[in-house]
Length: 328
Image (cartoon, rainbow, N blue to C red; front, side, top):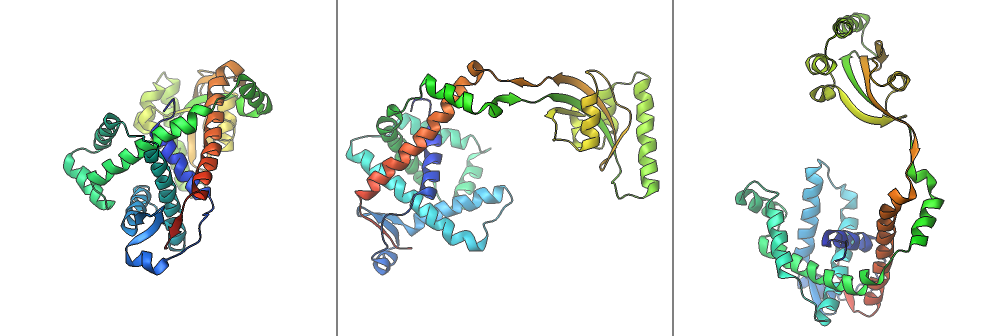
């Protein structure tokens, strides 16, 4: 696919599945459920087992982010996943009807790439078990995905282009998207003292930051002292907070940082986190990204938008010509 990888297409199809309104009415519910089918697409079955696998994958992804699916959203999510499977089956059937095939090398390479995300074969197998699938099923899905890719390339992506006039018009009409605010890069040393701490705790923290300040004034290395004494996670990087613009830090910290020149260090700054010593290591004046710099990014964005619109229309066309039965 020209400049659009299979992952992008499948993600787009998943999003489309969640937006499209089902075009078919439920029918043959009892018969379909008895046969273990969640849906039929032109007579081709999508099993409840397959739907359960897709739901299991989603649950595993949520668990990795330490999140859970709210019980009241489970049925809605399963319905949307079924829509996704139906749309994929429609596209696959159209591709096969047109004689399109997956690139076997691409399928094999993708399997190997997936395995590289795991330390060993055993861990890979355990993951497959946790998401209720196996390598054969993954290979089958990749084959289907790359077959669909061939169809989408030919019927959708190859028909889409973005003109210079379109990119220029987007740039001119969205100037706020290309304005870069003033930024500062700062490092800091923090001695914690919560704003609700008692006076004794605050006095102890302030005494500690003053000792560090004296070391710095005598020529101490800011990075080394930050690594040794700072109570912020940034200590691992010598206190470096990278570039930030206004509105990203608490007001007293921001005010002090933006008032400093490159290379300067602040006096002790008190915030709700405690006491800071701030050193500015770089500054960037506000600027506007030029059209030439932004053109390629704009073109890619507009192309993705066009692909999404065209894919929605393409699937709607296939859906209207298909016989779809859903049993859930």
